[in-house]
Image (cartoon, rainbow, N blue to C red):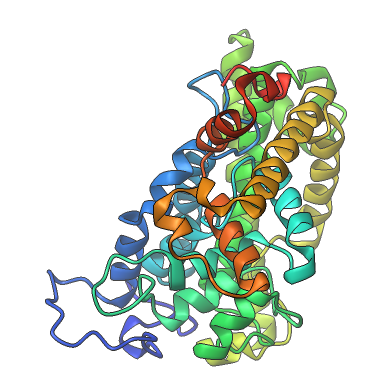
Length: 390
């Protein structure tokens, strides 16, 4: 396939932070393909299997978790990249890795870690993604991290746009391997960001309906959903409702993907950009929804926050998750030996570094591991009721 002039070229990468002398090159993979494979083979990626997407440690086997969400984002992102003539492998790597920095229990766990670490810079999952991949995941003998290319690290840092005020974790990585944080990222990174939105907008609807926290009547109050559902009903009159709803989710993904492809092509043409460097210097995001669909998507997000993410049962689970994470943090601050020999033996000398070390340990936990450690320290009876099923 002929790539666009705006596509990232693995042969023109700005390189990796660490040289890899004597490394055996296995097979015909290029630099971005190797990045993708390093991410897939990482322990941090495997742990996403037991990290919250919407539902905390869900009872059912059919709900998304952070791992399956990341795979679905990659499928959507790769399709958009192919249609735009972008580098599919870089796009896929960014999609697969974008949530690796999430702590247990999703945003609730992040809120608790941020509060516990506030005096020493706080916590944010995007910065921790970079920290995990560049510092904490250490499979190689000669250096820390998995030594991703500049383009992959840049895309992970800036997929949501330029970073004017990086948190401490991202700032540390940038100081060692400058990522030009104030410019825009590649189109591959911009596609990864909008693929994330498309995936969770639609798949969270699917999971919300399955869990009974959303109803079709509620969804029909959203014009974007209602319009698409009427088209589905017209194509399949008399079909079972559950199958129509799954068709609705597929259709909405298709509508959003086609909109992104058309809008991105128009934006690139209007901006007159003809290289990756010009994409970064464009001064605005080029990859994304049209103005009309962006407005509809914002309305859909507001609906999802009001009716799913802030559902009473979800709020109870989030409160319970914050109790577990803050309880673990307090316990490890009081007695770092509770983290176990591997982590306690590497405890830094300064207070700030100790706080961040404890944060690294907790952020790497899965939902179930965090609950089990909390139960060991505080007793199973102390586990909040909303998490007692785990």
